[in-house]
Image (cartoon, rainbow, N blue to C red):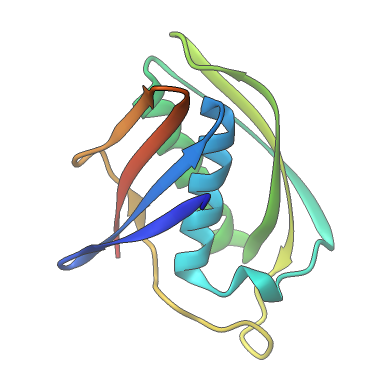
Length: 140
């Protein structure tokens, strides 16, 4: 399993996994998109590039997810697939990713939750044994 939805009273959360930290980040992004719509119905018609940086790995995750939310809210863009092309989780943390998807179409795409922001509340990014785990809560 790449991610799972966490049941949190009044908010929504994602627990994402990966063999690498960048894979866990990509899975967290896809998990967040799954809160918004059924990503199985998204087509890869457009590509966007996202670059974020932060002083911490947790800050990088929040910046990344909030950038995805901004692009959905502003341009209607929703992704189906992510390809991380540059990543460092040691401060200063940096990430560059290609996101493939399309503009959200209310006539074709199911509308699920209105995700407002990724938060630092109980955020967790850690390596456990041989895999990375991320937990993040979103304001909805």
